[in-house]
Each structure stands twice: as C-alpha cells, then as structure tokens.
Amino acid sequence: MNIRFNILALFGFWLMLAPQLLKAQNPIITDVFTADPAPIVYDQKVYLYTSHDTASVSSTNYEMKDWLVFSSSDMVNWTNHGPKLSPKDFSWATGDAYAAEVEERDGKFYFYVSTFHKDDERSNGGAAIGVAVADSPLGPFKDAKGEALIYNEMTTDNPHGWDDIDPTVFVDDDGQAYMYWGNGSLKMVKLKDNMVEIDGPIHYYNPKNFIEGPWVYKRKDLYYLVYASQGEERERIEYATSSSPEGPWNYQEVLAESAPNSFTIHPGIVNYKGKDYFFYHNGVLPTGGSYRRSIAVDNMHYNEDGTIQKIEQTDEGVRPVE
Image (cartoon, rainbow, N blue to C red; front, side):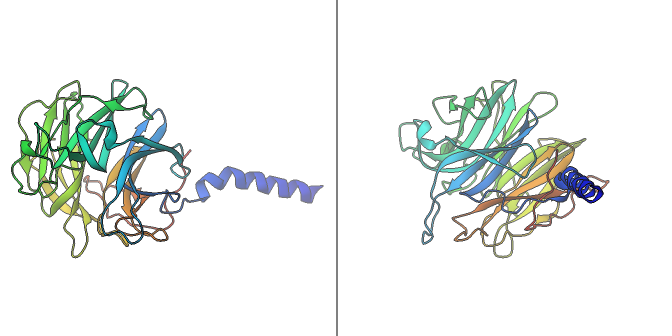
C-alpha cells in the first residue's frame, strides 16, 4: 500500500512539474511549411499569422498562395486554423502572399498584407500593401478598402518593383498608428484612426544593413526596430532603437545570426505572460529550404539598459507557460 501510494504521489508530483520541465521542439509548426511569423497576444492567447510556402522540392522560387493562422495558450501546442486570407480576396491583387501582420484596435483586427498589384488604371503593377478587417482574430477577413493602401508608384526611392513589402503596424500609447515596410529601404507613414488610410507623407530611412522584414514595438520608453539585414551570405537579424517611433534610429547590433538552411529570416516579437519571445523562420524540416521554410521560437532577454541579448537559435524551443 505504501509503495503504491508513493508511486502515485510521485506521478502526481511529476504531473504538476511537467509544464515547467517539458520543452517544445523547433520548428513549432511541422505539418505545413510556414514563414514570416507575425504574433499578437489577445484574450490570453497568442495568435500567429504566417506566410504559407507551397513550392515543390525542386522549385527555385517562392510559391505562397494564402496566409495561415495558428493559436496557442502555452507557446508549445499550436492549433492550425487554416488559411484565413488570400490575394484572391483583394480585387486589385495578383500573385503570391508575402509577409503580413495583424494589429488589433478597438475590438477589430486589421490584416496588413504584401502581395502584387494588377496592371490597371491605378498602377502598372509591382508590390503593394493591402489591408483586410475582421471582428475576430480568426476572421472572416474582408478587404477594408477595395483598393491597395500602398502601391508601387507611391514610393520612388528604389528602382525595383518589389520594395513595398513586409508591413508592420505599431500603435503608440497616444493612439497614433504607424506603418513601416520596405525592401532595400525602410519606409514609414502614419495611419488615420480608422487604420485603413494613410495620414501624411511617406518617410524614408536607411538603417544599417537593412534589407526587409521590419518589426517595430515599444518596451518601457524605448522604441525598437528589428529587421532582416545583409549578412555575410544570407540574411540575419539586426536592430536599432529610438526615443521616438519616427526615429532617428540608432543602430545597436546583430540580434540573430542567419537561420539554418534558409536564405531569408524574418522576426516577430511578443511578450506573453511576462516572458519575451522571438519568432523567426528557418529551413530545417525534412525537404525544407529557402522556399519551404518553417517557423521557430526562442526565448528573448533584455539587459538592464534596454539592449537585447543575442538570440540563441535552438532545437529545443521554449518551455510551456501556464
């Protein structure tokens, strides 16, 4: 009886400790190929919006037909809610579904996407940014404007037609919303309160080694600009800080080295239940690569002066949180 009781007691004790002892595995999504992570926290859950790589093993280019949504309550177990938006949902759009991000405001969820514009009376084509809206983080999402928010002819600082990609939206404490995006240079514009119209001129920046994939957020009194940068052979992640969401941006250092088996890397950062997490993508799944990527997440830590400790990309992932 005592032996049986002790075994049961030990088993119960292990169950209590299990959430603290177990770790996830990286990548966190293994049933489909995903990229360009964009996490948000809402109603005690993390919602993760991703690109969806569908290229074949032999493909030499991206094939990305829609955007997927996942959710988790512990950062370890992720529910796949499937595709929630596609370029086909925008009458003006054509081509693939590149990096996107969702921002919640006043109970509505604004889905900012990058894709390509049709050659029509408004634009001669090229990369463009659109916005969809829903009353739930899981949609259904619909085009909020009926036209692109940003199209290629609106920005003239780069000669290539794919510079208007990778939107990230940040709402400051005073309620002012900003959108940042770009390939080859960083662009920024204020958004009106309705979140679907620009408010003023587009501003241009050239952070050190900037390539694409910006992510902007605020922690305490410091604003952070994290981005995919020019590495030695492949992209890596670097960051800058500022006392204002409008810059100037002061370069800090390399935050994460190049991802294994992937030319690109893309940051997504969130604080959830008191812990900071760094999302990114790599190409380590079986048959994976630069066009068949997979999302991973690792812990993120700050120094007392607000600088960020260099990210350690791991196979183990993060501990579950309750």
